[in-house]
Amino acid sequence: MLRGRKGKVVRDILYFALVAIIVIPFLFPFFWMVVSSVKTNADITRVPPAWTFKPTTMHYRGVFAEHDFSRYMFNSAVIAFGSTFCSLLLGLPAAYSIARFKQGKLALAILVARIVPGITFLIPWFILFSRLRMVDTYTSMILAHMLVGLPFIIWVMTPFFESLPVELEQAAMIDGATRQGAFFRVLLPLTGPGVITSSILSFIFSWNNFMFGVVLTGAKTKTLPVAVFNFMAYSEINWGGLMAAAVTITLPVIIIALVAQRYIIQGLTAGAVKE
Image (cartoon, rainbow, N blue to C red; front, side):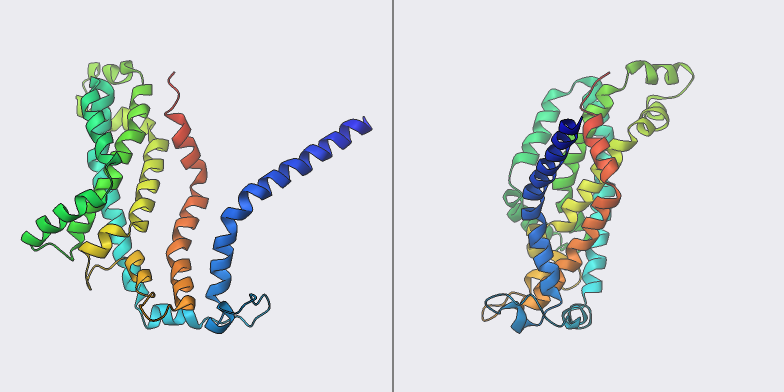
């Protein structure tokens, strides 16, 4: 019995050591970013690093007072919510159609659109929106971000609809519901975990997107990733402001992931198993 307890202790130690080896390399950059955001620029660039220092909030004050980050956060939120909502509006019926009517060619075309690098669409998008005078508008950014969110939502949700028995909607239609009614009233509520998962991940993809923002936005619709990039100039880098801005843009995503991690895991695994 004593050997059994010792063996369990050894297994627990090895388990936590393995977890630490895997987790620490991922958490250390974020830890360094947070610590650097409350250091002075002199302490940040000191070699060797200064582990004892007097914390300061000057960088955060500068981020919101001098650089108007609250405006950029609003822009990012509008674009992320708008692109996620529009992607759900189009993606859920598309996923249902692919699942029920076995539209393999359409699914392949959507997959190709997702695989193709986003920069491929950047120049055509810019030319199109320039001709339509839509550069530096929320509409252009929402449409551009849907290139990322829409295919992802379709490919996440298709297995969910495939896992639902056809008899469910047939029973609803026998009771007098239309196909659209059966979709909204019967099938869609059963795919809740998938909808939540795809919505959260689509929102995060949009929130973190830099490439479309740096070309298609201007003074009115500049997003957080573009605003963070502005801390890097040719002659110098404002490390303290950059770290504070990076924490500002990262923290909402981390909070969303921590709050919804149960739904994300459930959503990514539930659709993978057919009953």
